[in-house]
Length: 204
Image (tube, rainbow, N blue to C red):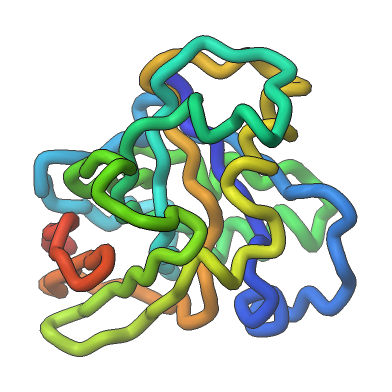
């Protein structure tokens, strides 16, 4: 199982992070399977970072083996969706970027891919128009809608499958909207998809 993640897929978030240019193609990075955090287990802030940020995202689960998938067939290759959090060591990412170095370590560390409960895609009329949000200690801090994506889910699947074979159980983190921010010990994070709570964890 691999975790495929999309960067800079929401215009407002791009401006929030200081990215003003347009990306002609999706920005893709990977997280190892050891990054997965599920079953409402707590997220422990690692000792190598002083600035861990949450990035709430819609996550889709791949259910078929696929390579060079055409966009018009991409909807056949995922069967479930949920809310996830791409935890990011922002201080490390900033430093690596300033040095022109790869920044995987700021994204792919242990437990950096929190995952909510999956629900079947068939529950939703239109996967490209799903609202999701994150609450911290009961206060909404981030919200997004998949309609605002620069690159749609089906186009992302088609694009990624040109480079790497998608396998059953692979996860696609589709990008975060504006509103990312830091987490601290003791906070309670709850992620919602279309008003239904799918993700629930504490920061330790």
